[in-house]
Image 1 (cartoon, one colour):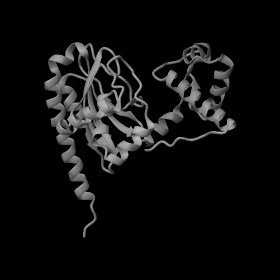
Image 2 (cartoon, one colour):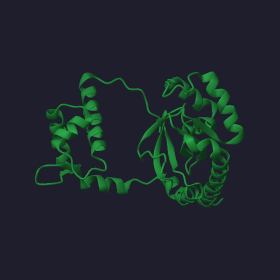
Image 3 (cartoon, helix red, strand yellow):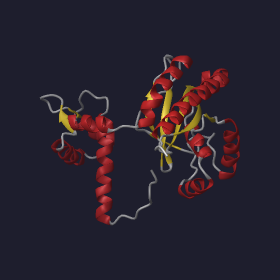
Image 4 (spheres, one colour):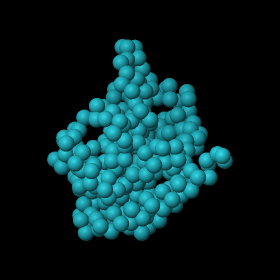
Length: 266
């Protein structure tokens, strides 16, 4: 989905800010069995009165509820209904293969979709190792310094890549991050030849990753990645890349079969 740059009027900007703050509050409550208003305000870094106003609006829509007589807050049932309506066909088709890949390698496996100028996680299979790399579904990552992002960039056509170049700034997440398009494009050439992209502590120190892109049912760009603590990555790099390629080929075969079945008869 292409995200457009929009100039907001002052009143509109205030509305966008409220939505962003509400999203921060909902994320802060994720995984919590109950949180006081004061603790929530502290966690999101907003005045208690501001959080209270937003909570009142979210409560009217059942996006939050009181978890106890003392007024501790938690996510509400309306979110469950919305979550159940969200479907990513590519994630549903890929999940058995992602699970098999995770079991084979012992590492976490992620699936991300391209969303404008970022990659958004839509599924994750946590690894079985005690020390493992785990993020969360719904989290977004930059394209230029991640394995999934670089894999996605490598399969774009020249026109789409040109649009992306105008929209994103190559900011440094770590000292290892790529900071110039000339360097990045050189790496994309290598990725196109092998189908495999790497993140060697470019986004987070201590975490490295290997990734590959796949094209979904409707032409959407997705990527599978295996993020791994760097202490294990060097010795497992070739093994992970080989297992990832096999997984990608299996999923591509399923997607290709689906496309053939869905084509109208001539």
